Length: 440
Image (tube, rainbow, N blue to C red; front, side, top):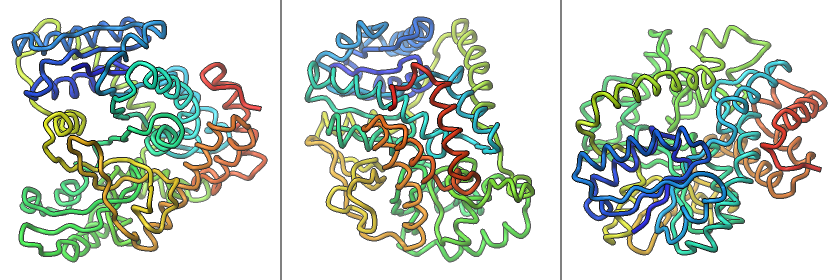
């Protein structure tokens, strides 16, 4: 069996996901095809994967493919394709995504999921992933495409609608959501046997139900403790999601630094005191990129000296999905799929939703959730509107559709007027240059 990893220069992801596969009996004897356009990063990943493989007695075949000219060879006959690319990288594209909006008074924290940063990231990424999908149709039409790339809903939604239907979008925030709030309010004893239901959209899916092992509702006590913590502890760094519990009634999947920019409530030039009050880390993603680049270089140098001594299976879904398909053993995930047949009844069918999915030998089977609480669905819809318009812009290649996507973003539209949004978008499109397709 062949498992292809697109964007294998994402070494930490490669280490986790291929490491998981090497620890899985039905996957460990596979060919792992590593593909990237950056030779240095690809070689680093190859060294790490080969070291893990060697530690386990070399059950796998590790191959590498460099550059667009070798992309079809990397994909040929793959059973599974994992996508973890970052088009344009930190420098120049992430820097552009943050610095140009800042000139117009628009501040961001992460900029990879929604907002003007998320829109630009989607537009430069979709065009590349669509090329992957065209190659897959030709050389591995029966493969399953596992997308880990943000903005998840925009990219996965586009692929599922227009490029390669056998696709699922994956994120690790679903796995950590319930345990995060239980730890945050001192209810760790309920983590192990909890029952939960999570549904919504990627990075803003709602913890709709959380019960102990006997089926007792934990939310009343969670809400009581959250209310008290918001009064007593002004320093903790998960305030936005806890305010969601106070005002919307439910906790959501992704961190507060992410969710601070998915709405018009927290990053407001007219109310600068909110940044300090709610511990919102502006420019967090560029800072994180710099730190990650530095820490990875140090870690890689240490690994070359010490070698791979041991590793364990991570919480990432990819290996468990592949295992479920190969062995026909059912496994439940939180997956990003189209809202076909109204899995969430108060969202449009074109939306990409994050819902519980069963995986088995036949593939991915999303479950019907029904209607979300009205306020939660309404907040999600402000994000979905922007996501769908960005997908339309990627499809139409019209500048006006890019403007409309930015105008529909809840944070951008709460800070800037229409003319300023248009000028900012034009400057961003020009600055990204060849990383973007041509817009008319």
